[in-house]
Length: 558
Image 1: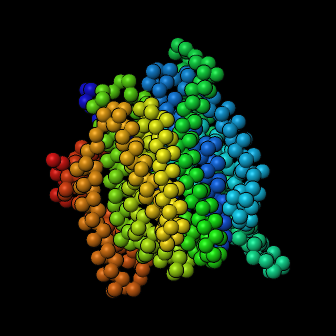
Image 2: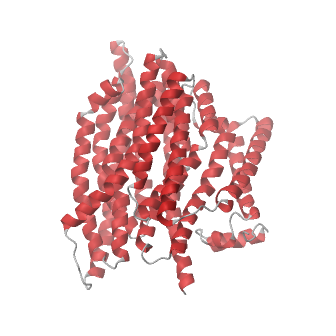
Image 3: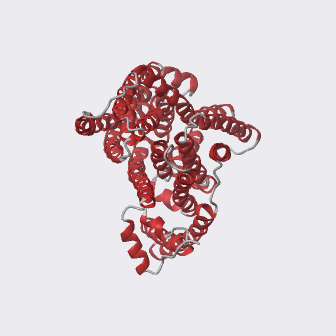
C-alpha cells in the first residue's frame, strides 16, 4: 500500500505539473500568435519600443509579485502537511495584505518613473506612454500571485491554468485592437507634425492595453474560483481544532521567504533590462544607425527570445508544482523518495528542453518565415541567433527546475546567491563581447549562455551540498539527446523534401514538426529513455501504454 501511495503521489505531482505546463504552453503559443500581427502593426520601431517598455515592466513585476505565488504555495503546503488547514487561510489573508502594499509601491514607481526610464535609462522617449499603461498591471498581478499561490499550495494547478489561459486570450485580443487603433492615431499625428515619434509611442502603448485588460479578467476569474472553493473549505474546517498563528508572525515568515525568491527572479529579469540598456548605449556610442539597432534588437528580443522561452513553460510549470510538493512531503518522505522526485522533475523537463533546442536550431529559418513577416534581414539574423543560442533552452530549463528544488527543500536563499554571481559573469562577458570583440547582438546571446551555464553549475552544487543529490545522466540527458538528434535529422529531411516538391514553407514546416514529434516519441520508447512506469505517470498514461505496446515501441529501460 505504501508503494502504491508513493506512485500515486508521484503521478499526481507530474499530472499537476503537466496541467500547468500545457496551460503555459498554450499561453506561450497564444503569445506567439498575437505577436505576429502585433509586430506587423507596430513595425521595427514600435516593436522595439514595446519590448523595451515590457522589459522594464517585467522587472518591476518580478520584484512586486513574482515571489508571491511560490512563497504562498510553500507556506500553504507546509501547513496542510502539518494538518493546519486553518492557518493556510490566514496565510492567504496575509498575502493579500502584502500584495496591496507592495503592488501600490510598484505602481507608483512605474507610473511616476515612466519619464525617468524613458528619457534617462533607455534614452527612448517613445516608451513612456507604454510604461504608464502597464503600471496598474503590476498591482493587479500581485493579487493574482496570492490567489494562484493559495490554490497551488493545495496541490491543484487547475485554477492557475484556467486564469492564465483566459488572461492571455483577453491580452491577445486587446493588444492587437489597442495597437491598431493607437498606432493609426499616432501615424496621423506624425503626418500632421512631420514627426516620426507618435506612431511608435502610441502603438506601443496600445499593445500594452492588452496586458492590463488580461490581468483584470484573470483576477476576476481567480476571485470567482476562490469564492466557490472557500465557502466549501470553511465548512470543512468548522469542526477542527484551530491553533492559530498570528498574522504578524505569518507576515514576517512570508516576507522572509519572498525576499530571496524575488531577488533571484529580479536578477534574472534585470539581466534583460541591463542587456537592453547596455546594447542601446553601445549602439549610440558605436555609431550604429537607428534602423540597424531596431533590426538587431527586434531579432533578439522579439523573435529569438520569444521562441526560446516557449519550451521553458514546461520547466516553469514543473518547478511551480515541485515547490509545494516537496514542502508538503519533506518531513514525511525518505531521502531516497525526495531524490527520486527531484530526478523525475529534472528528467521530464529535459525531455522537452533538449528536443526543443535541436528543433529550433534545425528549423530556425523556416519557423521564422512561418511566424513573422518582417524583413528577410531581421529573420535571417534571428535564425542565426537561434542556431547559436538554442542551448539556452536546456540551460534555463535546468536552472528553473533546480531553483524550484532549492526553494522546495527550504534553501530559498541559494538561487538568489547563485544568480547574483552568474549575473556578474554575464555582464563581464557582455561588455567584452560588445566593446572588445566584434560580436554585436551575438555577444548578448553569448552572455545569456554564460549566465545559464553558471546558474546550472552553482545550483547543482547547492543541491548536492544540501541532500547529496546526484544527477542521473543516461535517461535524463544522453538518451533524450540521441533521440533528439534522430528527430532533428528527420525534421530537416522532411522539410527539405517537401519544400522541394511543394514550394510551400507553411506546409513543409508543419509536416516536418509532425514528423519530428512522432520520431522523437518513438525514439524515446525504443531507446528506453521512457519506461512503461514513466508512461503511466502521464495523463491518460494507461491508454498511452496500450498504444505503445500495439506499435511494438515499448520496452523497459535498462
